[in-house]
Image (tube, rainbow, N blue to C red):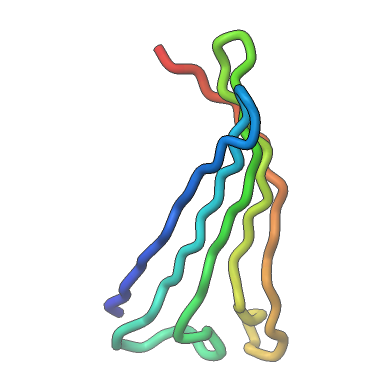
Length: 90
């Protein structure tokens, strides 16, 4: 199956040392077969808050994807998750 994916990302700095981050993406099936009940177009998103603390980048975000269906194709729903990340540059 061939697909096309695109996304838009952005960052706003509302206060010193704080960043609001966001992303919106879309995946579209161009051709080929797909699982029964799977939507032709799916989206994913993420919105988060990040800061620096003692040389670490800390981020808390909510992310999601949808719409999708259960394996039997009966129930449409979205999926969300709370994500905490810590990174350090070397």
